[in-house]
Image (cartoon, rainbow, N blue to C red; front, side):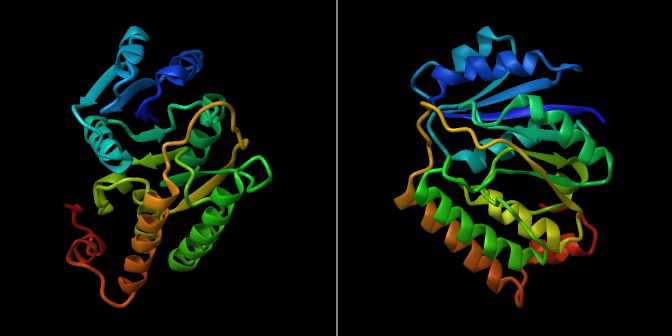
Length: 236
């Protein structure tokens, strides 16, 4: 499989260089794209100095927008691995994601242990969101908010994804499952260091729960784009 790495990045200059250095050490080396989501701290320059491709938003638009822009730019690849710019997702785990995709998975989810290493509020919110997503998807989802994933090309071509912030990561799990795509999970370490999370509890948790509520309603009233995708047409 031809796999690319996609890193949505916002205010990540202090950690991005180390992530890119570790990515460069993988064999085979992956095509890497950084989407600088309106950073003001030189994040884009760090990526350019590392010699990777960079797309830049003039203002912050949100992780979901950055992911969709990256997926469009990498549409020729068989799969796209997404990982965060803050060093919480070890690039050395990528071969396990690729192996799962080569084994037939269309979406491979990183699954952190919801342990004491994760802040309590994040652990509680993730547990609620993951349980709800599991029910909606009809299969266990251990960590619905982990951004370390591998998306297969066929899934990206057919699954409708709504631009936004972190809530897109819950939406794509549920919609992909409803369209019959195969989902696999890969255990990854729970890593928290000096980095500052860009998730804002007061802003992002309600958005995630709102999307899960909308997806609950879609069980009985699927939107037009999902009906088209279910018929086998390309999702718009």
